[in-house]
Each structure stands twice: as structure tokens, then as C-alpha cells.
Length: 437
Image (tube, rainbow, N blue to C red; front, side, top):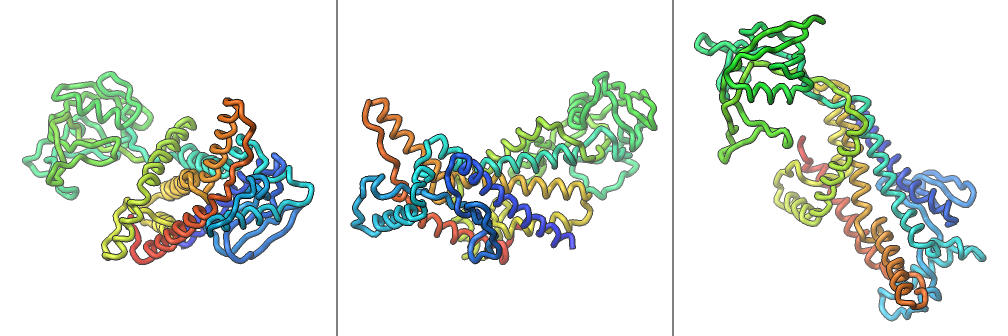
């Protein structure tokens, strides 16, 4: 039931994200006077629609995208000099211009999209991706500020009885030959909250861990809070070989043979309690920026990742955790997170919110690829048109007419076919050879 519920949540949030993305295009377009004839969530057959004012709003059967139809997207033939249509590419562009012109009502040519200035075109076309970025901010803020992140705290979960070697297993027990752990010998108990160490106020587990590791074998004062009372103790760490932990990577450092790298450090024999700690609101932009940067790196390597995906399906090899996934894969991840045993519901909620935020960031980045029919393709066309006009102005030349963006229609069809094929491949791969988490 939890699995199915999480999948439903992903589908609903995805539809809302698509719908709000299109709102990001529609609202500024209407504010600038452009007639918006259709607002649709999904593709394919229409399941429901209603006309309000001059716009038909509807829901279609395939929830893998959406669109708003802005009247007059392409300039008419006479506005671009009636270019000849000698090749099939030219005929495609001509047909697109004529179809666009047919949507313009008599006397409403000024309301056509192609008539907008470059800044207004940019606002309209960037409105959709920016809306996804705003959604990501909201979801990430709910996760980090509302719930928090699982964080190691100075409240002690356990105090070891002895000092075990660095290669000891998790189930290995103390023997009479193992030296006593310094924390237990000093009278530190599970549940104590470390308030200060060697005169330094303790604010986090990572800070305390660094202080202990740098101490060496010398007696230091330590203050713990126990049952609401401060208790002064003295502890003498031992120097022991411990695994090197990479804080940024979130994993232990391994050598060439795959064994943990160790170093001699101060050791007390204590472990932290992992609690949900709410993050400050100002931490959200940094997390969103980092996620956006990681997504940019994935999109930049998308062609090679597509090749790797095809190879895994042809060769029948297992996909690794860096493989790209589609909506089916996202749904699987959500279901597995929600139904995982041993995880607190708050951790599950945060994981789902972060995943949905990352999904919206992916929509933001992907839509900015400067290829039609993506929003980035329209942005690039608007920038080119604006650049031509600025160059003409600086050179004292007549203002050029609108850029014939209909010439990009054949490229748009090609990109659409490629994206469609990639989508089908991802659905197939996510079903028969899913990425394991």
C-alpha cells in the first residue's frame, strides 16, 4: 500500500509540475496580449476540456508533458520575404508559417507571439522552466526546513566497552585482551549529550569527532549533559588506527585493493545519535544550486549515457546507479523508498520530497537545452533575432524583420523523434532492467 501510495504521489506531483510549467508560459503571454488558444496537460486523446474566455483548458491521456498554444508562433510568409519552398525542408517551414498564420484572427495580428519584443519572448519562454525551479525550491524547503535532514548529533547512542581493531566486524565482541575504551573508563554513558570538549563548546558531531581525532593521548576535560544536569569528566583518548572518512563524498576512503585506508587518530569509543535536524532557510538555495549543477553535468553527458543505456540493454548487463532513468524509474524509486523497512516516516518523506525537487530541477535544466521544440530552442531563436536587430541598430541599418523560426521546424521534428525514442527506451529499461537502489 505504501509503495502504491508513493507512486500515486509522484504521478500527481509530476502532473502538477507539468501544469504549473505551462502556467509559467501562459500567464506572461496573456499579460503581453498574446492569445493563448489551448492549455493542455498531457498528449494524445483529450480526456476532459473546458473553454473559458478564449482559451480551451484540458487534460489529455498521456501524462508525459503538456503545452500551451500561443497564436502566431511563426511569422507569416510576407513578414519573412516569402521565401521559396523548393525542397521538402522549405515546404515544412512554409506549411508551419501558413498554419500559424491561419490561427491569427482578422485584425489581431498585433496579438501574435512573433510580434513580441525579444525581452518579452524570453520572459514567456523562460517562464515554464523557471516555474519548475520555483517548485524545486518549495519542495526542498519543505524537506530541509519543515522536516530536516538525518544528522549525527552530540547525543551519544552508544559507548563502546573496548578498543577493537580497525578491521573488526560489526558483530565482533570485546575480549579480555582488548583495552578498555576511554569513554567507558571515564564514566560517559549512552544518552549523554556532549556539551564541551577540552574547553571548546561542542555544536555538532562532526566538530566533536574532529576534536577527538586531533587530541592524541592526553587527558582532557569533557562536559556532558545527563538528565538535565551538567557532569564534568576527564577522558584520556587512545591513539588507534581508524578508517579515513571523506565528509564531502559521504563514504570511507578505499585503497587500490578496495580496503579502507586508516590513519592513527585519537579514539574515545562513542557513537552519535542520528536525529532529524531542521536546516535554516538560507541553506535551501545552496542545496538547489548544487543539485542543479549535478543535473547540468548529467545533461552535458546525455549522449554518452544514452549509448551506455543501449549497450546495457543489448548486452543484458546490469545498469549501475549512474544510469539515467525515466518516469517509470522515478516511480519505482518512490515506491521502494516508501515501503523500505527500518526507515522512519520522516526520512521517507524527506527522501521523496528531495527526489521530486530533483525531478523539477531536471525539467528546468532539460528544457533549457537550446534545441527546438524545447523551451531553450525558442529562447535561442529569440536571442538570435534580438542580436540581429541590435547589430543593425549599431550599424545604422534598417530594422530587420522577424527571424524565420519556422526554418527550425524540421530540426524540431528530429529532436522530437529522438526524445520519443529515448523515452520509450527508458520505459523499457526501467521495467526489464531497473536501476537498483
